[in-house]
Figure 1 (cartoon, helix red, strand yellow):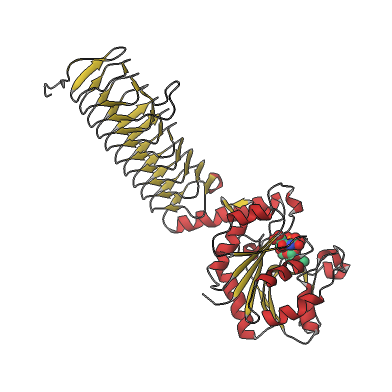
Figure 2 (figure 1 turned 120 degrees about the horizontal axis):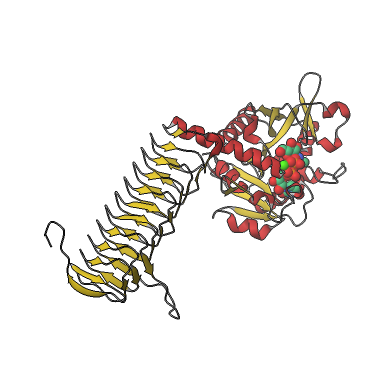
Length: 457
Ligand code: UD1
Ligand code: CA
């Protein structure tokens, strides 16, 4: 970590997105792109970080992590004006400051490190990261003299036809000595095609005043691709997804079809797990080893143990123990916790429910606000009636270890089925059933002690 300051510019209108959401808040891999830039930056700098906000400032400020300062740019007068606003809240008079645009979400910490190192080792007043690209459309061109010395950056709208043909571009990452920057910013003038104060004019002004401007050439152009439109957003998303899947494959995960597998960058997956097509793993998810996930698994904010199978199912904010089998067509809603070897099968929905080891919920059931013990058989069509007409709130159901819930049992919560108790098919349980007893009918009545087929109670 280095003790330099950093600024992220995020006050622009983002017109080309055609969105009511500020551009820098559009998610990439499920996380606002501005936060991805901040993540990379904060992995490198330990000094103060200022985000310049303007368009949608309140919305942008709400997502910022604690410890980040903001500066308000009242009108989007250009990137140079935005940087000027940032310096007003940055008390430091000297030292280096890293500057990044908020719309380059694929940037990596190493790129910031390389830029800072080149800046400090070269003793430059400013250093900008440049790249040579096949298609420079929309980007600022880097102009050099006959000896290859940096002269200035010219924005596309202000280019002559010859300048337009230049393929060396400004990537949107730069570093300044604060002293030089503070002296130069007041000299910016908006006398250009867009009538804006261009940050990029600072480099030319510094160079012309006899100070040294350095450039660092980035080879991995995709790391600094700007997102200005929905098309570029999709391209960046595809790139991020490719990186994520390659990281997982390098860790020993099989991804059968990367084209239809969507994994958020922060997701962890253990070795020898196989991800099958049409699988979506959203942020906050961790999958263990030797699992088979998919086809058709959508998992969000959940922990999945080892050797679990999940297919054609949705799992939200839940915990799934080792060796469970989920699906097809199961829905684990928030607050579901399954111990080991639980089976949740076709058309079963669980919500805010804890299930013990070796319990099976194989077919067409709804368990809500329930605590289910070990080795329970939940018959087809079982429903916990947790929501009562005219009574506010949800009511709990408890099913103790080894109970056998007959098909089509309605459990009218709050209610408890004792350990080893049995309900008959189609019964409506309105009162607690003591352990070891059999209850049948509507409403269910206890008729006798439960007996196993082998005669043991
Ligand atoms: C900018 C650079 C261009 C570079 C390209 C790289 C300038 C003038 N141009 O162009 O040389 O090749 O990025 O991606 O700097 N912003 C503000 N306030 C403003 C205007 C913009 O905070 O008044 C912020 C935006 O929110 C955005 C960033 O600055 O995050 C860059 O602005 P944008 O309009 O996207 O600049 P580009 O046209 O892409
Ligand atoms: Ca941009």
